[in-house]
Length: 355
Image (cartoon, rainbow, N blue to C red; front, side, top):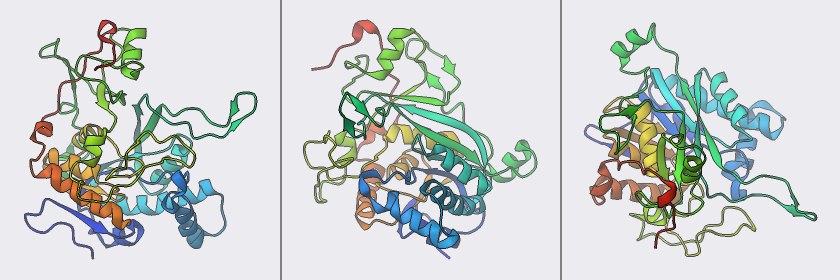
């Protein structure tokens, strides 16, 4: 049986395939799951995002379409999450727009209740499309990612479940949106999160910032959680001693990172976004599991939110990156991020690209 955490241990990243390691975790040992699983769309031709998934599913269930294989594969690990979660424990899982229905069905078929669908909106995005004569293409530019919110069924009523297990409800007060110009006001957290442009600064939005565009069209409409897409400094912090490599999201795509990165993971999520998700679904002091740990953003978020963390990752390079990043952020090196900064309040008059 795979051990969770030793006495006094705050976090751990375990190497291995999650389908092989999850069955070794104890029943009802995890408070919440926050994960960014493979999307099943062959991102950057990585086998872990396509061929490996289809191979595992077909070995167990026979011939099927890529979508069916992804759904069956999801059901396999979702059933294990149902087992290791405490009753009422929540799951948040990122997905690709064209595969979210498969992700959702797989989570549900694994025994989890589908509770909601969150939406992470962002401006920067790379069209992953072939171009044809006459101004034609096969896809649109990505502008959001869906996040499925699921839950293991509660043990009795939600009130009973909270008393027995400490799980089953969302921490809405801890995740309420607060505004600097409205002292004491807190708005109920919505199922939409918007990302500022990476060039935005407090009270000063960059050109084409999606948050500012929403506010410009309807003042006051943008009063939900804002985060900024992952900056290079956040992505690489703690990994400076690791080899630098170039990141190309898709073959033939323009590389937004002109310089090599010490953390070249293709789908690094913003720490502030992951902190909000961890805080939303995890009881104080609870254990967060990420069965697809990647470069460790969930682990960083869990430690900064005073939760414990267990991550599983099959790629040895990403294990080194995850461990380095979590160590860096958990030792107080960047104490300034220990408190969530107030949201940017965009105004049309303040909209300009900072120097």
